[in-house]
Length: 75
Image (tube, rainbow, N blue to C red):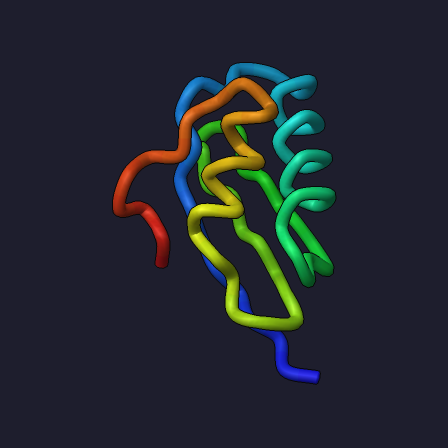
């Protein structure tokens, strides 16, 4: 199984609850997700998947959690 690591930037997170909400929604909403790591101070969200990640799926999951994916932040 190949592992794909994608990094995004999310705006609007301010606390541990925000981190938990984003982690939960991305884990549930992005197919193939095996791990989600959120760095609150930078807004960086690292998504590990077992297939290429679809940026739209991450955007939808982040918005479902109540936050915004910074456009063009996929690395």
